[in-house]
Length: 177
Image (tube, rainbow, N blue to C red; front, side):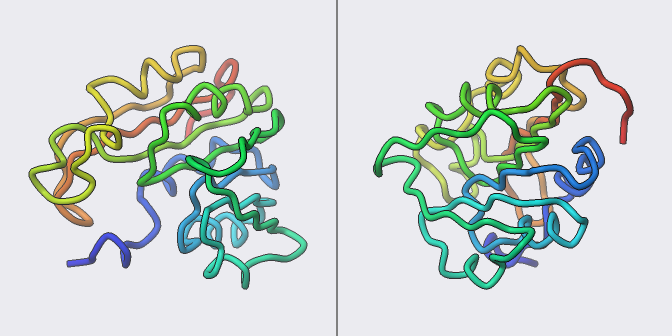
């Protein structure tokens, strides 16, 4: 069984990546070790990888990848741009950023988001309710977008957890993955 730190790219992200226009500008928010940054670069996207610790992201920096160190929760206020073709967020929740994420999408852009939800405290971290989504919270946070898919509940793979995930686009849907 994979641990949380060793998990492969989220199947949810891989599944909905085709919603993001080919070659588009994608924000990997709270990029962590860069598993999705790598995937995005390999698939031909231009990536803005943001995290408070960029140690493992720095080697990915180059013509197709901008790496930025930002403490999204306690550092200087950080403003998301307003022209991302896609935004990917996994295993991270800072509620004050949710409206900015939706507003930062370019027309036709997609958000692919997956993180922990209430009930996850039974399985391990995070346990703090500040870092666990309430039922339907992502649907509400991205209500101005067109929801393509939404799931919430208990999962067994890649490890037992309670999650919530959404794939949504800014504007009408032109094609489904």
